[in-house]
Length: 514
Image 1: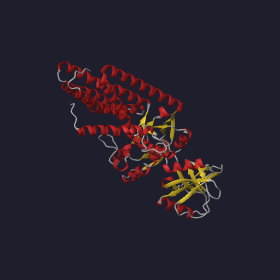
Image 2 (image 1 turned 90 degrees about the vertical axis):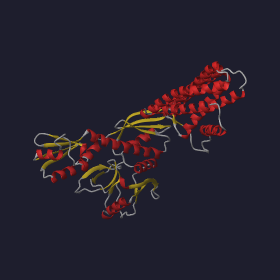
Image 3 (image 1 turned 30 degrees about the horizontal axis):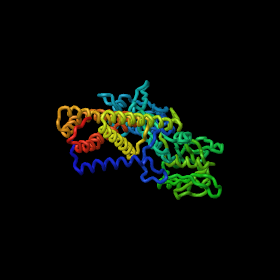
Image 4 (image 1 turned 135 degrees about the vertical axis):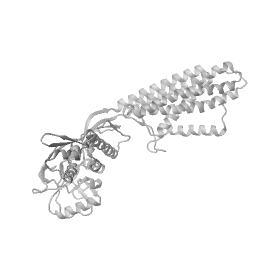
């Protein structure tokens, strides 16, 4: 195992130098980077905000249960089941039927009391049908149905939260699902958490509705930004789903910030038709149930472009544009937990972590040099190479380093030395019985290999499990530990072994001790 071909040597040192070079990218000029890659600092190291958000799906459940009315009525009519007193009570439907046995035959299987095959058409396996007194039926979402709604809302909310935060320009945010209804948001280095909370707290449900006292669709009485009471038609002319883009702008004449928006083709058709048919009337722009503007329709707007004005500051116009671009949240988000880590605390954490790493590193180097002399120096060289490669891989991955991540690096230092200790102690045993130094070193590396691999692979399995089932800081620890194990094996069995072979082959005829 001490023989290396030239091609093997070239490959080993090529991999080492290329990976190690990436570690130096963390020290380059930030204004003129050669390659924009670096290890990012986590929330606990550079400070920032931690938010735990929870979706409130009550309104969405009410909306979804309403969507089941037409399919259920249609099925009842198709099967000639007379019904009446059809009512929507928040998250449930109630109605009475004239023939309960026929209803059970249609909606339930006699064998296992499950909802019948019309499931496939209307996904009614999400519903529970409960018989009440007087042939009354109550329809609610089942546990599976509620879980399906929550999962869909949560995934959509995570995507929209990510869009909003990315538009703000926050670097390296962490946005993760927590349980069935919660979203974890970590924003390292954030200086204005209140603005983010306001952006994430708005569902951004935008719609355009006519101001109309007499509407066959019914009216809502809403108060505009100026305090004016307006009767707004419940009929939605167009929703925010038809927006393609929204950007802050400045009106040239009034010099006031506004929001310019662009509609898709369907939205442009709807908006053009509505403004053509209602010239002279007022069109209310309603955001999350509040009228932000109610301008007069002076002429048809058929271009698909428009302007929202509402006495905004430029920051408010920018934030509104961001909300409209990112899309509406399916449900409101509530902040259930909030923490802020100051930059001073993060700086102290960095100093403590670096101090721990340096102290441990120096002590290990001194011990190895004292214990194994020239071979201890080789082990120390391999250890330095190990750390350079570890930081290089983290830089390539643009990983986020946290305090647990630093703990993983410190543990890697110990494990890297442990591999060399196992090898050198095995070589010591071989030197007692072998007359050939080369054969003793070769046999020592061969026999120690299985032990080193077993020790490191079992730790690697633990790191993989921690990464798969852990979260946040635990994942950071698992990543650095896992990468550290790989670099340890590379440096111990390639770099250190090659350097050892050079020393052994040059001193083949001399007595050598470890």
